[in-house]
Length: 175
Ligand SMILES: CC(C)(COP(=O)(O)OP(=O)(O)OC[C@H]1O[C@@H](n2cnc3c(N)ncnc32)[C@H](O)[C@@H]1OP(=O)(O)O)[C@@H](O)C(=O)NCCC(=O)NCCS
Image (cartoon, rainbow, N blue to C red):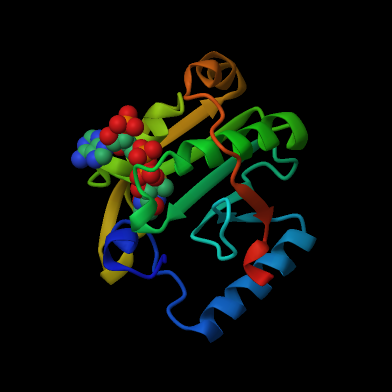
């Protein structure tokens, strides 16, 4: 789902083989146990396979400031799944982890990724020059976005109402 040219264009390459996927999943578990990283797999209602991921990791050790990243299989773009998952993960961060600020970054050319962050109420705060090597070895400038707990309280009620709940299970890729 994630190792496709469209999905990978502005992010780092996804695991391309089952062995690489297993190694990634093992790494997520080790990093989670060490308190450095949390990865959710997105499993749409009625399905059994994950079609994308949401990741969140601490910028401050306590998770007071955290960063997130997300990728969804192309066929699910525009389906509403992104917003539904973003709501769950943002609620989890602000209400459970005690996060006050979630940072996100997107390559300038990634119009869809930037629009997605804006839609959640995040504010663009700056330009990160040549900050990330994306797929194909292309080094890109990124926009730094931040979603504060106040932003979230303001925007959350305006996002589309809860749809049919998709099963969002932590590290469900290992199932
Ligand atoms: C980022 C991602 C998870 C968002 O999921 P999605 O289902 O595409 O998101 P949505 O459709 O809910 O929102 C995207 C928004 O971008 C808008 N958009 C799409 N193309 C656009 C363009 N060229 N210019 C401006 N806005 C654009 C859409 O209209 C939509 O806004 P709307 O709902 O107000 O109409 C998904 O696109 C993805 O996996 N992309 C590849 C990986 C990636 O780039 N990750 C993010 C790095 S920050």
